[in-house]
Length: 405
Length: 234
Ligand SMILES: Nc1ncnc2c1ncn2[C@@H]1O[C@H](COP(=O)(O)OP(=O)(O)OP(=O)(O)O)[C@@H](O)[C@H]1O
Ligand SMILES: [Mg+2]
Image (tube, rainbow over all chains, first blue to last red; front, side, top):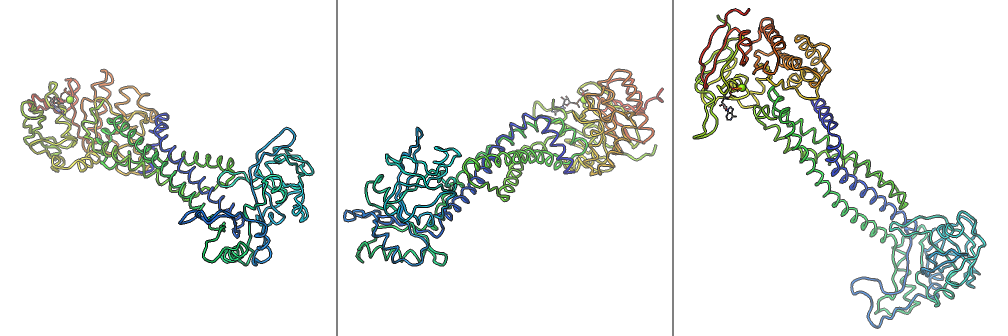
């Protein structure tokens, strides 16, 4: 009986292919949007988490200035003292439980090779940086200690920079100009892709800190100090030690707050993940509204269908169809229609999410639970919005219905 | 004459509208039809023939009076019970055939069986048997658009008899057909009446069609004006 009814409804849907398709559009767009949003959203979350753990989930980042928080930035007495090399030296000398400690000062700078140019993130740092960030070279070598110390004009470049200037060629030994100073390429970083926020992590140039300070920044400041904890030390344990050492070397008296901030990347990972979850939820709500619109479309077309087929309903009632038979027939039809829209929507949504995952280099993370939910949801929409038209059909008077032209 | 009563009207009124505009389509009809009878109903337009047929076929109920069908007070049953009565005991044939469009002859004939919950294979067998009885074998996969009027009416008759009903209700079954097709259909009905013992109540405007029946009831202004046994058909 039900199978019979499903076949019947498929036939009537096929009879009006264009109309059925237009009816489905609302559901298709709604479901496709939901699926695409949620799939891209969970891909982004995964990516952000992976990024953070790539940063090293056991990474602390120190920068100057008071930690943001209640009370806001410091008052007038708090002229921000930048981090300096003696701070770094103190950490290197006294901090236990760290695998790598490295300075990093950063700026967006125009990089030129021949007639080509590119704006890149240029970082001044030392040889421990690769270890601290857990970055690897695909060719060449890191800075030597003497290059770091003397500030030689050498640099490591990321894949985007290489692509821009040398295509697939070997960049090693070439000289590029970074903000009017020249530096020799000694190594190439492995590709890292985009961050969850679309920032190209391969558009980078690393150079010795002293070279950066002298030729690009024009001061002796250090923007950040990266501290990677070793495998046995949790960052939560490392953080107070770092604070003590820095307060001591920077002579922050006990009655004052620290004039530097220590950020724990693990906490940041959680914060960013929850931000993307919130965003996904909001976009999902917008998509939900289009599902509602789709449901109204189904209701509309089912009302038309019931009116068009009044005579058919009359015939069925005359030869002994129970009210519930008619009700079920139109409910099944609405549900099949809506399910069809849901399935098309899922396919389109997954395709969109797949394209987005390629474009944004995030993982393609379709969730079976979300897909099942979308299937169930579109079926429910069909039933809910099909119910009123179906009931109208079922309640028709057979004599009137038979007389209907 | 001792076949049991199938249909009785006891002072049946059927009225439409209110006040000034009130119309009595049936105004106190008394009527009895026995099992196995073949009855023709005639009368001028608007005399209440179709109204009476709708009540006989359990599609409608009297406003006043009692209609009993197979001993059941059918006039006081709710619509779903009457649907069940129709499905079990009544077959309908209409002037306009009333087949489902874009649906094959066989599927049209199977329709009442679906609502009886008959399994697919048995349905197909019974439908083929009914189509054989109306001499339509070979046309079972044609849709109504691909059949002539006479063929469509035979499909409708096959659909009406596929459930082996007790009663066949036919409102102007030959109204849309030419003379040759009309006699074909009437011979078919006569044979079904004789062979299956099917009770037939049929509305017609034509005397030669009414002549196929054993008895003619003439309606006038919502009354039974005449009720006569026909001379043995030629
Ligand atoms: N649903 C209705 N609402 C109002 N009046 C109706 C309705 N159905 C029938 N009537 C009236 O009842 C009377 C009898 O109608 P009925 O259809 O029974 O006539 P009939 O004998 O079948 O006529 P015909 O030979 O033209 O088919 C008519 O006056 C008609 O206008
Ligand atoms: Mg009539």
